[in-house]
Amino acid sequence: MSDTTETPPARNPAMKIALIVVVLLLVLTVLYALSDRMAPSTSRGIVSAHVVQIAPRVSGEVTRVHVDDDAVVQAGDPLFSLDSLAFDLALRQAEANLASTTQGIDASSASLVAAQAAVTQARVALDNAREQADRTLRLEERGIASTAQGDSARASVADAEARLASAQANLESARTQLGPEGDENPAILAAQAQLERAQYDLASTTVHAPHFGVVTNVVLSEGQFIGAGNPALTFIDANAAWITVDLRENQLQNVEPGDPVHLLFDALPGQIYEGRVQSIAWGINPGRNVQGGLVVNQPANRWFEPARQIPVRVELNGGMENWPRQVRVGGKVHAVVFADGTTNPIAWMARAIQRIRSFVTYLH
Image (cartoon, rainbow, N blue to C red; front, side):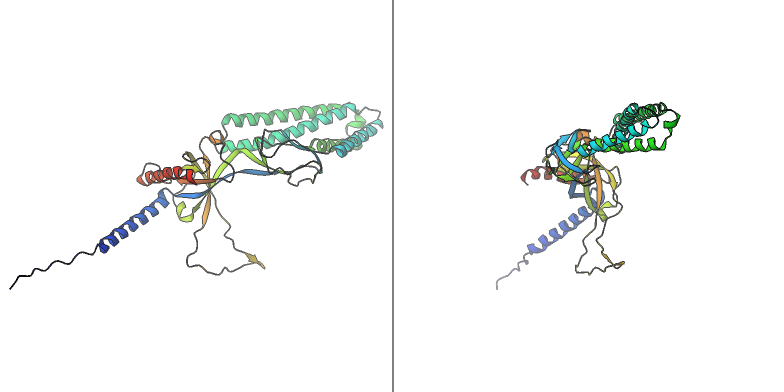
């Protein structure tokens, strides 16, 4: 008889591999859930800015376009001019009407016309100063514009108001020189109002840049007729840009205004910028249609309803002084929001992944 020894059955390696895969999946699922709460990220960021459609206050034929497409302009630079002949004639008619009215009381209208022109110029200057100041003060409230810029804006408005007050005082003095019959004469007051309107319309035939920025989509040409209030060209504010990122609702659980954000612009591979959450949108349009005053029922044709995404506004640290010139409005941005700070392991992992992504951006 020969002794036979039984060999133990070989272990199935597939069981061990399956166990490792299950453990890895569980670990990745936990890390994914933690990252959504502690360091949510998205590659659906968009560079945003104030985009304004510039329109003239009066209607007319374009006689000259002062800027080229994609030109950088300063506040007050002329953009385009309209034919001023009709407005010159209206101004002359208003001046003649005032002169005719004052002749009835044996007074001269020359000083009144000059004083009224000064008031109109001062009022236009004040309107422009207030428009620029309002924008600067809004940026100052959010920390984008410096306190010195805010003080300068307030000083500009105060100076424009003082100039308008001085011009109005000179106008009152000119009215007083007409004597008791002309100071409150309704015909003279009506002629003055007509004159001021004619002066204001004539000044509006040249459209100026509201502030520092860029003009784009310039399709104006000489001879083109533009109606009052109709957009003529697009103006992008160069001093107010931000990033809009879309985060899923479950990613917003711990996100608060002021949280630090790391930003990767596709236009600048290898470079990561720092920013902060400025605000979180309070609502979006879910796309529900209304017919006959009732909400239309949306058929459920998906197994899983896609997650809703809420816009989050992010601003670059340091304001526009640190804004990269290579980045354009509408550009793509990858953002990581550190909702639980930057010193935890999840934040370290998110920063490492974004750093790797920054170099991969060179390839696509």
